Each structure stands twice: as C-alpha cells, then as structure tokens.
Image 1 (tube, helix red, strand yellow):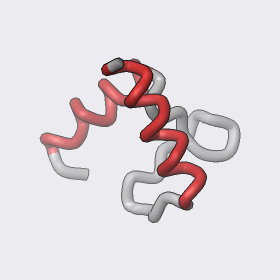
Image 2 (cartoon, one colour; image 1 turned 90 degrees about the vertical axis):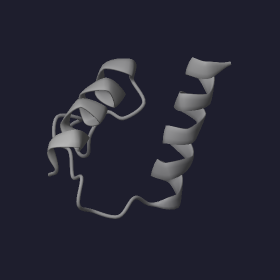
Image 3 (tube, helix red, strand yellow; image 1 turned 135 degrees about the vertical axis):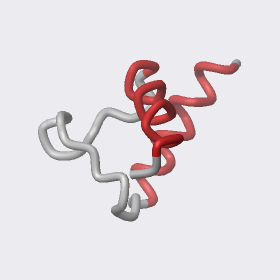
Image 4 (cartoon, one colour; image 1 turned 30 degrees about the vertical axis):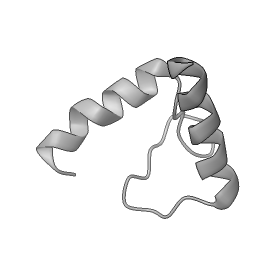
Length: 50
C-alpha cells in the first residue's frame, strides 16, 4: 500500500466509512469492492458530510 493511502485508510476506518471484510478486522485494499460494498461506503460517507 502506498504511504499516502495509510492515513486515508486510517481515517475511513475511524470514521466508520469502511469496516473490513469477513469478521470486520481484515482490510483488502487491493481487492475490488462489490456493488453492495461500494454503495455502503458511499452512504456512510454521505452521512458524514450532510
């Protein structure tokens, strides 16, 4: 993972935008997100900014 991405991932986890896969403790930054996962991230992000 790139250096710049570490702080972004930490923010997204801390803000609740992403929570990981499976049991919620594993991130897969190189994997593709499903449509449902992407929609969930967008909704969570929108709730933060609105």
